Amino acid sequence: MKSKVKNQKSKILYLLPLLITGLPFVHAGEGKIAGMFLLDSLGGRAAALGNAGTALTGNLQSVGYNPSLVNTLHKRELYMQLQTTLGEVKTGALGYGQSGQWTGWAAQVVYMDAGTIHISLADGTQSSRDAQKDSVLSLSGGVSLAGVLDMGITVKQVSSKLVDAYSDNVIAGDAGVVLHMPVHGWIIGASVLNEGPELKYMTAKDPLPRLYRFGTSYTFCRQGDVKTLASIPWKAQDMEKISVFTFTADAVRDREGEMLYGTGVEWFYWPKAALRLGYQFGIPSEGFTFGFGLNLPAGYIIDYSMKMIDNLSDQHKVSLSFFWD
Image (tube, rainbow, N blue to C red; front, top):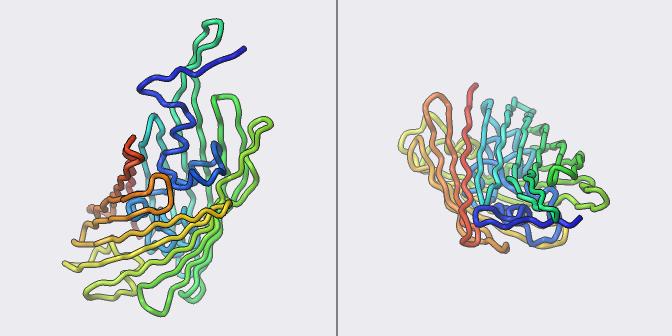
């Protein structure tokens, strides 16, 4: 029995949002349905900096770019994220992480809901189904060697379900390193993400979107200890009227050899706020990203980012983090 999906102005075919939901690597031709949300960034900070987060230290959101960054957490952190984009696609995340003198660990869950589709069968029967629901449960761990080299890995369970009928689960992993250069504030990072088996829907197989990332960041300020500020520039509590700048840049290679680039700058212009601007290169939706961070009382931080997607819709990310000793 043949079926068709009704198009409505307020609804978009469930495949389309998955291909443009801010996922900057869609043109690679891999992971066309499964695992596409694995390409999305966590948190509003790196997203506002052109998704250049491979060497961006100091918060749990960056662990999704490079698991070794879990070692750069200077406080315990709990964070939540909400993202909206084209159509009905929504994503959310919840995570916790902490690090000690030589080790760090984090646990995170990410969830994506692509909305519903309406189906009309040839006999006139109509029904609604969930277009796609995906989730990732991850556990990250890292170790720091003499404060010079950080290494980390992430093990994650990837679950995907299409139209309430086809589903699969696989175990995948990430690995990364961070090198603290002799020049205080200069950091280099590299990572391999989404290494694992293919997701399988009945007889159709879809590979995970493996990525190879290389990035660098540099933080400097007018005064103060730049070595400390390199790790926690925008959320320091004891800074008074100090301008702190962080420059970051990433180069990303997908499994098919396509190269992608992103860069951004963060200006911490007041003890409790930061402005961010970035740009992404080499992708269909390349363009500017921007956002801000607000350091609220009692250890709360709000990060926000925005990006235009091919003039069709705006992608908004809002994340709330809570830091404590």
